[in-house]
Image 1 (spheres, rainbow, N blue to C red):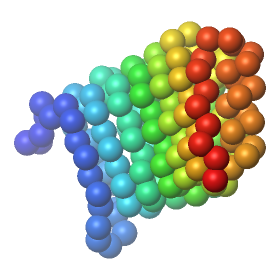
Image 2: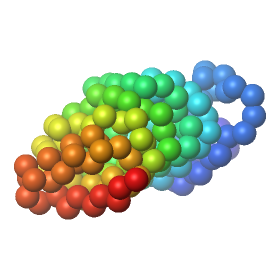
Image 3: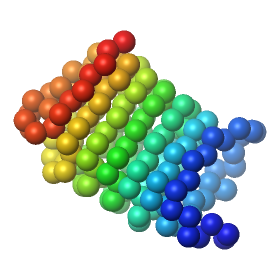
Length: 158
């Protein structure tokens, strides 16, 4: 209740397992960085419904689990997304989830199999960076870049 006008928030959670019902974020957030929450991926829907969120960084253990499946009306204003040191294997997402995304960074996600190919249809996507992640992720990012001819793909291999 005291943080209703907060626009930027960076949280490294350290403590006992978080009660997921208390995972409530200020409505006006534009920038959010989360680390070490270890919540299931389904709780990203709380973040995805933030109407003003433009920058999201999910770092080291922010969420746990192998599959991230997005809901229908998520991340409508997001322009920057960073996934770093997460144990995700499969990412089920489509271009309509991120209609304004301009830059995607995938770093140290060694188990991720691919960047969703439907991202070729994100009209504003300009850059995909795959840093120290698996070869499958690198190849899928390259395919997206080649298919569009307008998305710059940066790879830094293991």
